[in-house]
Length: 90
Image (cartoon, rainbow, N blue to C red):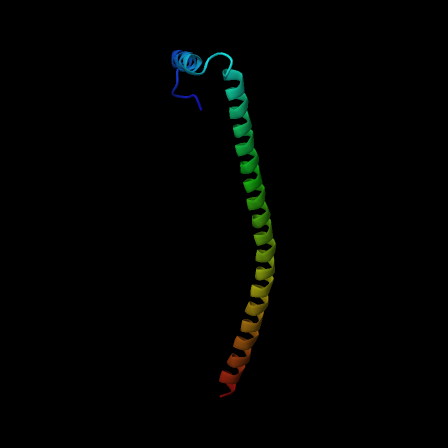
């Protein structure tokens, strides 16, 4: 997060915040920022879990779809064999 911000820049920003808000307001601002970050993390984790759940249901549906596809392929092969035998007799 702080890849492009040097230590001197952080000190300067903290000094400006101290001048603007005062020493007594900084702890409450830090608490509210921490609560906001926590809420964002929780929301992100909930979204991730929902995506995982939907991916798991797609996997199970995919296996059912694969079984159906196998059965359809088997029926196609049987039908092809039947039509081949009819063509041979003609």
